[in-house]
Length: 126
Image 1 (cartoon, one colour):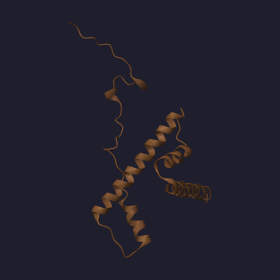
Image 2 (image 1 turned 30 degrees about the vertical axis):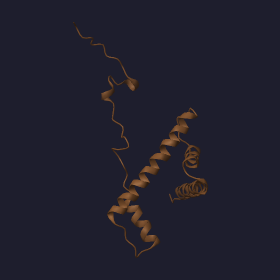
Image 3 (image 1 turned 90 degrees about the vertical axis):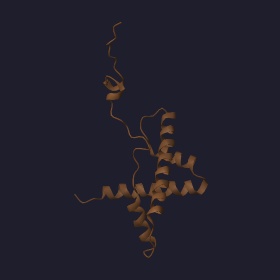
Image 4 (image 1 turned 45 degrees about the vertical axis):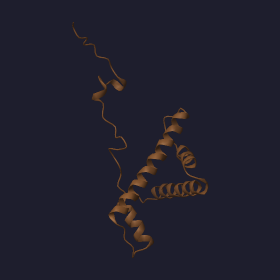
């Protein structure tokens, strides 16, 4: 019996699925926010410090929340048959994941932060 040597193309022109680049799964890549957590703590109370164990827990919480928001926003984007993630998708994901006032404040502060960033980028000296 001879084997079939017919090659079929997968999506994006790759010959077989193993030749594609591997995307990061959630266990492969987690951002480290420890530097930012320490900066915020020193800004709030310069006398306080934080242990490395507590820092690891805070980092895990931030990564978990980020992943939940991004997954929910992606689901909303796919549900609307869109290819682009919009700020509205992220805001709706926040309202779906967090209760009442917490979501409202998160969306408000997030929108203000984006507006400040865009404003600072537009006013840079040339």
